[in-house]
Image (cartoon, rainbow over all chains, first blue to last red; front, side, top):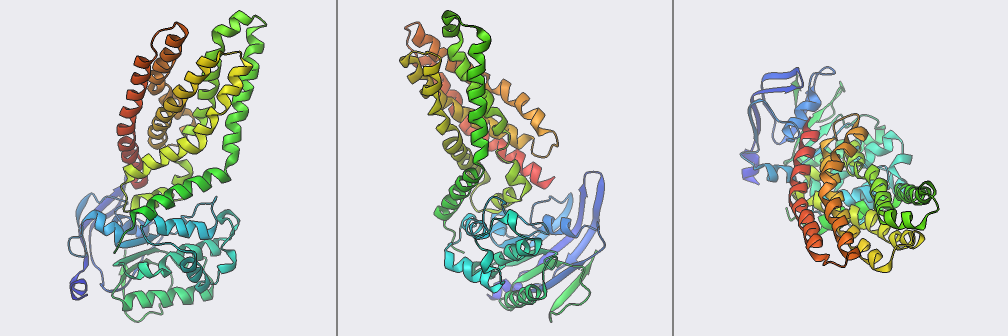
Amino acid sequence: MTSRLKDNMILKNISLTRGLKTIFSSLNIEFLCPGLNIIKGENGSGKTSLLMMISTLLQEDRGTIIRFGKLKKNDWLNEHILIKQNSSLSDELTIEENLKIWCGLKGWDFNTDKIEKSLKNFGILKYKNFLVSECSSGIKKKAELSKLNFDESFKLKCWLLDEPLNHLDENGKLFLKKIMDKFINMNGTILQTSHEKKINHKNFKIIKL
Amino acid sequence: MKINFKNILIALIEKEFKSYLRSINNFMNMIVFMIAIIILFPLTVGPSEEKLTLVSNAIVWIALIVSIIPTLDKIYISDFKNGWLEQYYYSPLLLEIIILIKCFVFWFFLIIPLTIFIPIFSILLNIPFLIIFWNIIIFAIGSLGFCLIGSICSSLTLGTKSNNLISPLLILPLAIPIFIFGNGVVEAVKSNYDPLPNLYLLITVCLILLIISPLISAYSIKIALTK
């Protein structure tokens, strides 16, 4: 655990272009590890691109990203979760099936009790057998965030959350805060993009793009 | 963290199976399309039995291929749109292996059931039993090749808006070896020659595709995801 405390995440002199548009040039950031990093910026300032780049979905043009020491790419893919703004649940499957298969794809154990517990905490247990195409945006978002509430998720190094509070009701926001605090207490690092002015967490760093 | 690869395989097969089961209309479309071709063809050829015997085998093949092609370019598109391809990218299992499993599941659940219809249509067109037997074998092997070619084309056109137009154009030239060797087997049986050399060549083409298709598909998918 001590070695994990020493680990950090740093962006050095990063440049990123998508198509013809330059999103960052010479970006330097040192993230708070462990802790909550809130990435703020106007629409189109590159918050989502930054998360996607850290998650290796986008390739930086120049510069270095240090992800917890020198983690190999495959190890890094197994050590973080990216929850995107848009739901990544299959419309043809039910919420329970989506989460079960997602756990399976990660190589984690999947059993119904574990998924039901997670859904119950978010207050959407009664929708578990609903097809995703029949659910509202709020329920989809909660189902998506339920991925963070598995025991294995708390053992990861990092959560990348793209606007997790969108579509969430008050109870959802409260429970999300609770699990985020639990993860940070377990020495986890969270990178969260947000437009919210009020931040209820104790230990956090704001990064402006 | 302990990663259970058996769980990944089970999850992947379960997902594909359930997705195909819930979009059964794709399968029904294929069958309706096949029936339409098989019924319309003899009507246009005319009542001559000789003419029909000459083209009957080709009719079954054309019906099968034409009904499969529209579904081939949809192997990845729904997963791409709802973000599952990204989940595959994050999975500890290599994307190439995931693609291979996906192709096998597609072949097994969507294409292999079509072979059940070959004897039915063949009897309707008065094709001899020996040819029906060989047709089933060739189609079972050749269709795996089609799926693998479809995987390449479907992944190449992921990011494009008009993939419906491009995919068939990409699939047809790549599928020519399968047509040639598949037809070669039937012609050899008809002329009382040994059909095995052509069958081996057909298997060779499929084995080559089995190696190159996941590599090309995975590379194209990574490009589409990071675009």
